[in-house]
Image (cartoon, rainbow, N blue to C red; front, side, top):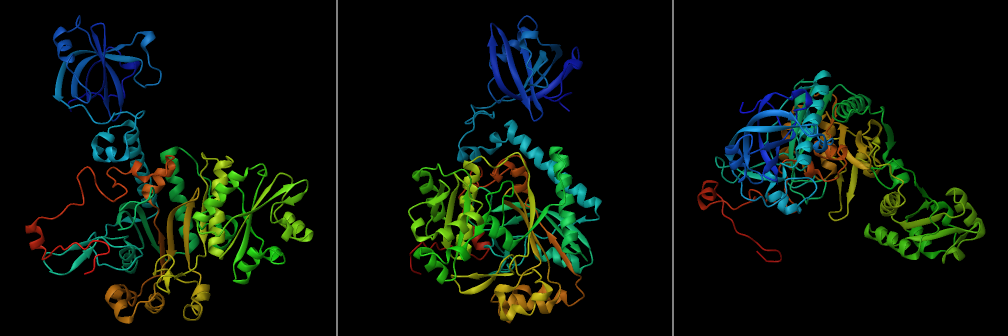
Length: 592
């Protein structure tokens, strides 16, 4: 090695030692002829001194050093003067008086600051990602991700799971998002797909009798970016045979407990709360509820149905519902503050947001006149409303009413500082619908994916009442964010064919897209199930950020571009010829 120590390990116990360090120049200071630099590597900073009285030649070279130059220095560890000690640094009690200096490489002036106090814009950070990754926070984030990955491997290995790699070049199958496709040079006109997940292969591993599988798997989906979404992401993919849903919950809770212990030294309390999907929607307006605070929703349709308020009555007549939220002690909200909440509700497709304040022991608003004293009393009792409270109402189709008021709940949680951001609150959401109605295509889609086993007692409803079918699937939610999904899988070909037919696949499509899976099920597929926590999202949340790009070494920007290497990029004419492809761009609105 070119160094004897890193820049983050020398302390007072090393005083008097001769050492060699390598790193980058973080900063350079000239104090009356004596030059000080902070030398940085992944492990920390060490102050290095160039004194002309100690070594004039080395000092002369140090006069020309710039930021981000790469150095190797040799010298002796000495104590810093008492007034120059830096208690914030592990190395803050010592410095190196330099005997020898090698400039291993020079640097032009970097376009971004290599420090955490000054953060460049997102596009600049991604273009110069190799510089952005030199910042201490980014290096700590990636090391944290490494610790989480190792903790996952350690726990799963201890439980008898084996790590198996699945292919990156796969068959294109409908799994909910667009595939990234790869043309085949050897098979003109045919394409591979990059895997949206290892779903089919991990099920095949169970058919193969491998019993317990895991993989820290790369997944690729061609969908629009968000803060918590990237074209390529990583999940801790897990599958096990001969298991119940509770067995999977136990494995998932043990996994999370080990990760939090190893990465944060935090003992995560288990078991996690279980909440049925219908209850989560009714209480929180979300299938990924933030359970760190209250402000639960309440369905008041049965009470207000007897009022004279036409807005509510029209919605109820069309089989809609009226949902209410009691914003405790918020009767002091101004009209502007209430209108902001209404705008939020409308942005999530609600028709509006009605309100009533509790004032002088009675309900007060412009719409109270449409509600009899008896109905007002029933509302106050149901909502536990007392002086100073604010009741907020949304009337609409069930999904819109619950979802939009659920967003208002989250906004109020932040506004009223009800959310303990230092807390980690996990819950399992269970008993999801197996199907959801696609309004645009007028057909049923798989709510999770089409390989989820229906509840045994609901098998007969697939043909007659798809809406009522509940699935043996579950989500793990942390602080209002979905960390993973999973399910007990279908392991019988007759049930798999039935479910795929219900989501619109013809027998020929079924054979073409999933024939190998259906065939495999005919050879004694065991009952099996699994789950797949998102590694990027989990790491980000543990570190207190929602932006998964902060824990990914080389992410894409919001337009799915790699700004550093300028991807995607066109292929050369020769490459296109080898792939038997011809490009013809059709612009939006242009007829072909």
